[in-house]
Length: 214
Image (cartoon, rainbow, N blue to C red; front, side, top):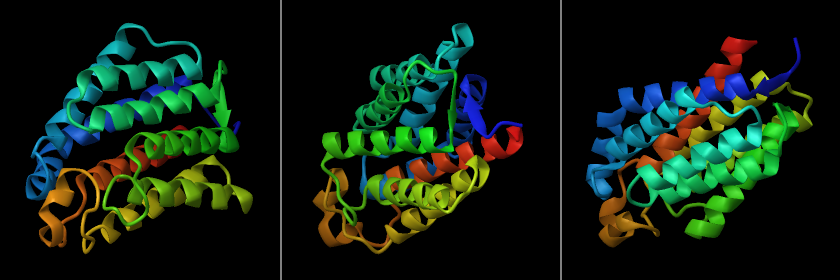
């Protein structure tokens, strides 16, 4: 067994993510109704459905084409801030991965790091702003740290998922400083950030996919 994730597993990842955001659509919308536009669940479910439909019709043979296709589909099909942000995540991942057919742990971590940097460049978010960054950054950092300790792809991705969940939960007491939630001021405290919640589902889906294919 090689410790890599190939294009077929990446398709499995986004398909699994489609399934989980559809399953959790009402929960994500409930989170967003408290501090946002009450459309995050519907937007993400619709966007990921479009992604899987596109991949089912024509799955690219290289990692870069696959991930960039995911990103472009999300940009064109997801409303609000989520489309550009998630689209940028996958577009940057694809650009960094390059025309390969599989990624090892370091390659996947590097692609995710580039995706995070793309989100920062587009959204200007920082730690503690109560955004998707608060789950994404700890996840990427945890993956890098696990790999540096010698962890393989499965353990590194699970560490990332665990860190994302902790980052999501840490948004509960925060006062939002970015996005629509920031308009609420102190009233935004006491609610989980929906973007951090959907990012956690993304990393949990990745870890589950890798565990299932190993």
